[in-house]
Length: 366
Image 1 (cartoon, rainbow, N blue to C red):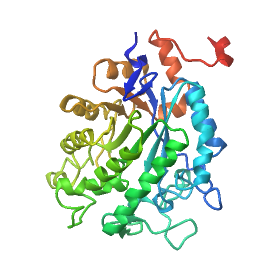
Image 2 (cartoon, rainbow, N blue to C red):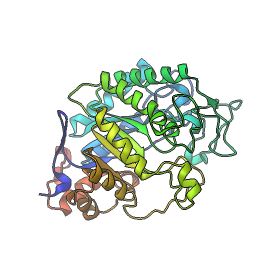
Image 3 (spheres, rainbow, N blue to C red):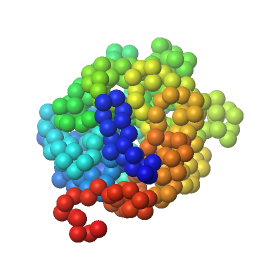
């Protein structure tokens, strides 16, 4: 039996295999009017194709918990009933075709108010159409071209925790079985955690314990409203990639910080760490290559009891099989490879001697 195609049970939920679809922004929701943030036919077709293709878990892209928490005006959201209701047909389709529906809840922080990536992805100023002023733990712009964000007050931080809770309640009502809290890629929670972006001097800044306070408050609040038999994931950037210069290393988030955080997340009810990296520092020096982030997932697996998923240039079935079979991660999350080939999981199953999960309509193909 292929390790990649063994089921994985987290709490009371069994995911049929270890090949999962990573959350990837599509920038394809309406950017104005009553349907802002509402998933469309594009999202149904895009996500549904990967369920038909055999992915065990489909994680919907970063979905904003507030309007100002969107990366772009065309992001998905989950702050109103219209959005919630539109997600129900997507979760129903995914479950009908054998995949577990999951959603990533997010707030972009200082990286909000940008254009769609195929238009360059650059920042949009608050006084421009489809622009607004971002918020962040500290008044530090992502780059010189980005708007300097407004520093959040403690009361505003507390309200954001409630925004995550409200979105989690809506996600459950919409039929999602996994909720992932986005604490990676330089977005709001990541900005709080890293000393590179958090210069606060109150209870949300300074020490490691203070900098992870917001993350744990969100985790605790979401876990409290998420059913006990369903898992909560957390996505982390395992490093800011500011390690070549010792001075930068003192400023940034490191893999050792990630291990320390993972132990806290486990104690607070998180069931799996989605282990990515980077995105918080525009000057980061990132060395990429096949499976380049797998060592971070493996490090957490070796030093904690928290299950992990690995992501990053995982493109070949036997590569993915080795990652899971060796115990370096409990699952793999495919991103761009699933954009190139929606049927990668079924192709991998055939290559590895497992049984593809095919809809009846496609049985003639095999």
